[in-house]
Image 1 (tube, rainbow, N blue to C red):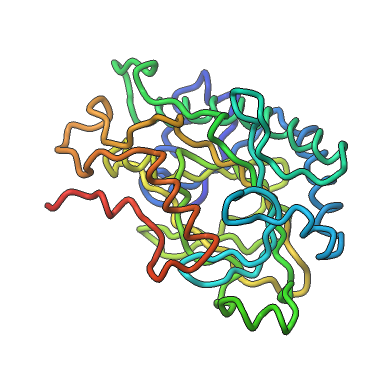
Image 2 (image 1 turned 180 degrees about the vertical axis):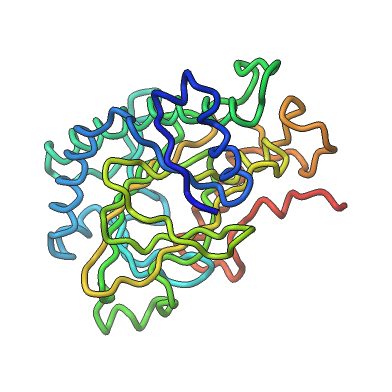
Length: 315
């Protein structure tokens, strides 16, 4: 099963383009977008990311994530209770009341580049979700009745995957050991993810048909992968992408995912318009689900992070 490349503008008017997208979403949950119109915001974002991660640990930790503020810089995140070999910087839109919970470095160029990227990604994510709905729904379904994503709850993460551990010997004594992956296998909790990756490679997804397969870099494209919320809404017809990143060899890797999430008050439950089968999940809230996922990234809670299988109905 290959990773299809979809021309975004063509797909919005040509229904035949949606067939390979539909097949990929049923098997592994990944496809690539071309002709997305984000080239300039992406270029500015890359410049900002490279400048930020090139700084010393002391400077980057001035905006260190805390247990209470899950935004900013972090260099010891856990996935599946294993420490990943990566550094991150997380941010989101200011709240509706205008308050800003982000931890920004004292660099206005950095902040302007990242907010511009966020706004452009939100617009493309909305168009992409509409494509996914058209691919699965077919004729006769009112797309306006289907759930929306929201820039208000969405987040962006700058990733840097170094070749060696960013923590020193003393710091390593008090944290979990590194696992055998730069980023361990997982699914994203939201609706879908727009991912920018450099040309280094290392991203893989798990295909039901072929096992682990590469998601190769393709210049000028955006990688799209489906998340847990969409899998629940589609009653398992479409698959949240299981993916991982292999350890780096020789040089580091940059990537930037935009996590397009449900609205803050969204219910996660199978949608009757998208499936004639019996619902496979109990209803649960986005707020409940994302809290469990975020808390587990910060510290080892003694069990794997919350997954949608927790809400799966007994067969």
